[in-house]
Length: 92
Image (cartoon, rainbow, N blue to C red):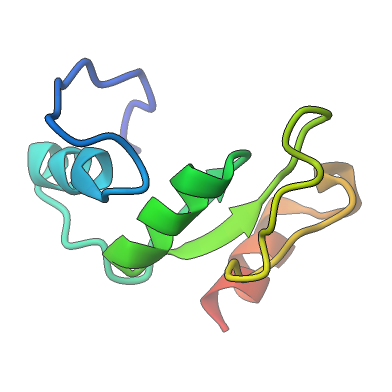
């Protein structure tokens, strides 16, 4: 399993540019195919989709009114899903 610790990698372009995702993939030697992102902000979800990730938007009280129609899923709550179900739903 990959350590999900923050990656302090400076980039010239912020999200929605996919630079942070691309640098993380490069750092861990991954290709990004079949990967998923969980984002709570519109720009982050756009960056994830630009890399080719499946993306689940998880709005919070600040981002709840943002447009997440480009994402693969916007659940009412993560507590409604088991991890294996999330993996299945994001991979189809």
